[in-house]
Amino acid sequence: MLCVPTEVRPSKIHGLGVFLLKPVKKGALVWRFDSRVDRVYITPEIESLPKHVQDYLYTYSYWHEDTDVYVMNGDGARHINHADKPNLSSSGSTFGDLKAARNLAAGTEITVSYHKHCDFVRLTGRFT
Image (cartoon, rainbow, N blue to C red; front, side):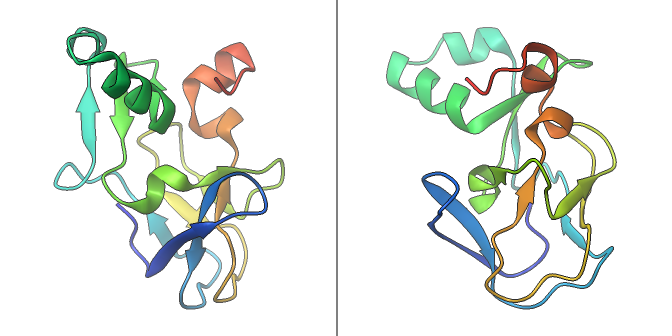
């Protein structure tokens, strides 16, 4: 769940991105897994759904190796894009808090390293 005010809009990085509506100070919590908003799926559950829904979930969720689940952000966080030098730091993959790596101005697109935050990318080097 995003913990700061944001909006989703077109991104220069890829498709849609998540942009801050207010400045965020270095170290501030930006995202945290919250089961009231975010959803967890197991593979058989996803595979029981229609193909177009499976495609959506595999595109916008990310796999957590230790628990073998897919996490689907229930808010705009599903549109956080990858950057080699992200402005959010993670305390761990998938379920780790995302905090501002530096002071961020309003209007900044927030980014993470998929290599750190997404186990599929970390293990395969592939984004899809």
